[in-house]
Image (cartoon, rainbow, N blue to C red; front, side, top):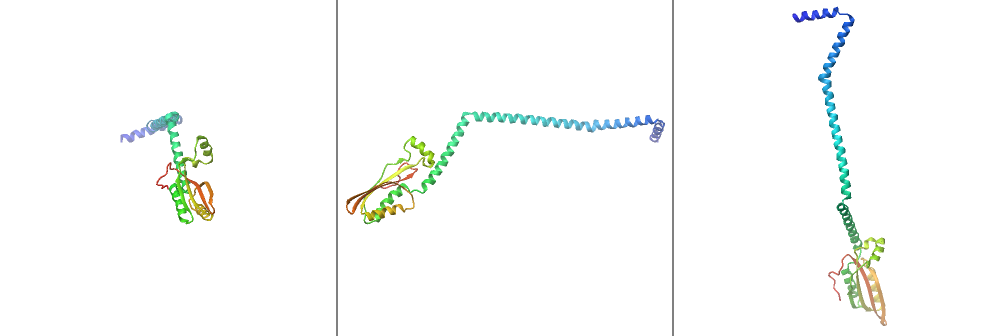
Length: 229
């Protein structure tokens, strides 16, 4: 009952107050409530937000430092002679690999050196009117003989780098008709080769001696598995 009496006394005291005093009491109570809320709820939230902002700023500052360090490291790497040389080596290796692929594609359509030698012999043997006198695999030589020609031809056809000329000379005797048939068969083979020389000398009509020099191209620097007469 004491609590009830106190409340009654409080009501009486409040009721006895003037309007000004009542408003001051209300304002004081409001300020007190706001202060309590600010101290126990709002201020801790402000402190936590400030802490988060500080942490975010710290992370951003670290990120900026890392980015600057990365840029400095990239500059150092790019200016490092060893790295520059390594990139040049990698570029050269890539160019070499590309060039080798192109060389293989280019030589695929050509008759191989051994096939060319055997082909010349076989075509003579197939024609009863021809007599094989000589079949010689001649010295292999680079397609580009000197630095000046190499520079000029490089601008025209890069696939000619690393190619070697494999020449073959065949000499046989026979008449004009059989010689013409031989040449026509030679030109009709599927694989390509290059003419270098054709010499037709009449010995005693209608017999003639024919000398043919042809060559093919290969990445091999020597004859492999060939049989010479």
